[in-house]
Image (cartoon, rainbow, N blue to C red):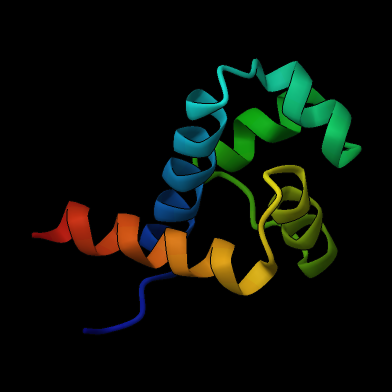
Length: 83
């Protein structure tokens, strides 16, 4: 499969939103834990911006995941949505 940055960002956003919803967190809650504004969380979830490495680490940490576990979850979301 060819790499599509836009699609990858959308899958990342869906994964973050899925984890956030499982915890029943509002965007404000995740933003607090990650150190971002709720509007930035919203943009990431919509796939409109590409988070930096440290931001991804902080997001994973907020969900009590290692970065590798978080990336694996994103990949699972992608596989399930492509089928």
